[in-house]
Image 1: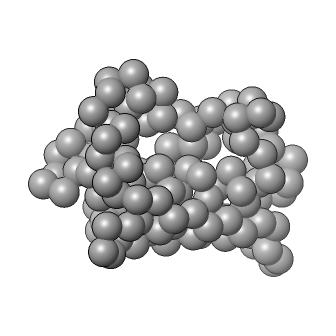
Image 2 (image 1 turned 135 degrees about the horizontal axis):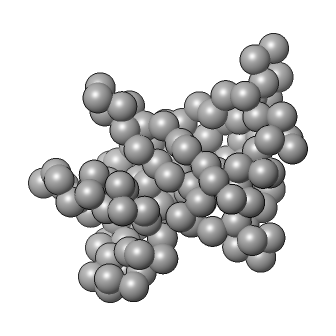
Image 3 (image 1 turned 90 degrees about the vertical axis):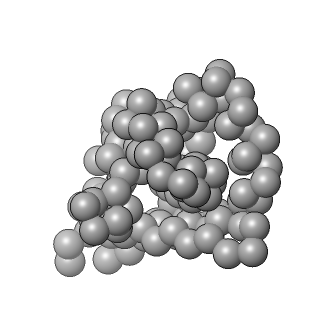
Length: 125
């Protein structure tokens, strides 16, 4: 059963400007995410995709910063194959558990200066 769906679209150029600030990077991304992004040539695209995924996740759980869900509580990492996955902590994890989330499906794409992410949260049934 689907519990929540979220989608977000961001300008890669806008994220490129934002990540020039160390404070922004630390406020939005975990150390593991920063390391992952900085390890590849197209780091800005990866930052934008991860940012879009975090926003999409907040939409899928129906909560955001006003409800104490912080960007760093939503960690977007990649399997060895490159496929993205999400780990949550804090209020984001608490909300996921209360909603009964058992699976998190994520897709991220980049094209023509934009990054998009879609999240589907579901149970196993």
